[in-house]
Amino acid sequence: MESTGKTDNGENKRTDIAQIGKKELIRRLFEGTGYENCRQLEIKPLEIAQTEENGCKSSNASVMNTSASFLEGVDFDLVYTPLKHLGYKVVLGAIGHLYAAMHQPQGIMVKLAISQRFCAEDIVLFFTGVVAAAKEHSIKQIGFDLLPSCTGMNINISALGISSVQSAKPDKNSLLCLTGNLGAAFMGLHVLEREKVAFNKIPADKVKDYVQPDLSKYKYVLSQYLQPEINPKTLNQFKEAGIIPCCGRFITKGLAESVLSLCEQWNLGARVYLNKIPIAAQTFEMAEEINMEATTAALNGGDDYKFLFVIPLSEHEHFHREFPNVDIIGHFTEPGAGAAVVTPEGNIIEIKSL
Image (cartoon, rainbow, N blue to C red; front, side):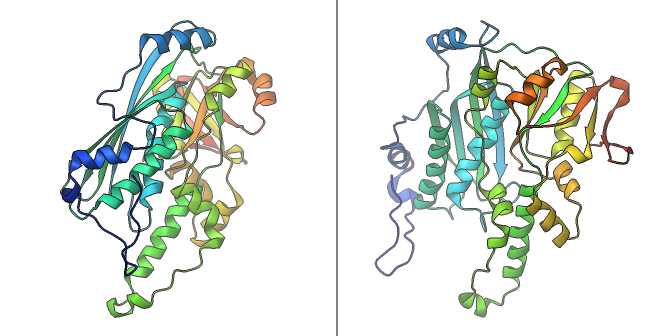
């Protein structure tokens, strides 16, 4: 279903969902997408058998479910988040946890709760983003439902994935490897929040004269927040290299939270070297502008949508050759050592949960 665009007088059309009906609207959403609305996500025995045949180091296929919730006003703000971007981003927010556990996404179930201020055209935009992400990541099944809400827009998304990979258990020498730079998304959010505050200070009688500010200098950090990306070939790259991570985390709440989570899961300590954490130049520039440490954003910011993989020490040289763009930022240690950041001067700072 395509958005109907504008009315004859140039205003955006707003079609009441009740005018179309929930079932008919959902039917139109799927029309021409190549997907059918699934009531229940499932992986068929044939798909499991094919995964076993094409898998690596194991013939025991496993199925994994993940879920994520996104609340308006808490996890996103529609003042500056386009609905199409939001639909795309929430899908990545769910399937990213599958990739971190070396599972290939197969299906997603999206439950969208909306208040009466949303119209059919809004749902079309959101669903367009969902489908774009699903196709990019070769997702075979989409389930979608609309529910009522008294508090704006709330999204619950579950994802189903499959894996034939058997990972080795990490030990005190295993390496912590990061797939991209951190902190940029958090800085992008700061830019958007700052502009929102400035806009809200404009007197009501002056709003019609408002001119969108030039934010081109913040293009990179804004894109990292509004339009994050995940490489759909992530798992294939590991398989082709013959390297299987021991485990991993999808970083959405800062590096510190992900490191602590891994340490707790495996009862190990960790050392992360501050000067090894990749941070983009644009992130440093924005951090300086708002008088903030860029490393703080990297450790405790959110929405990075990067992966922290744990690799056996024995694969160090092999991994470095196959993945030159992935940064080795630290390693596990004895359990009693705790989780800590090591500064370039050799100071050890404990990582604490916020």
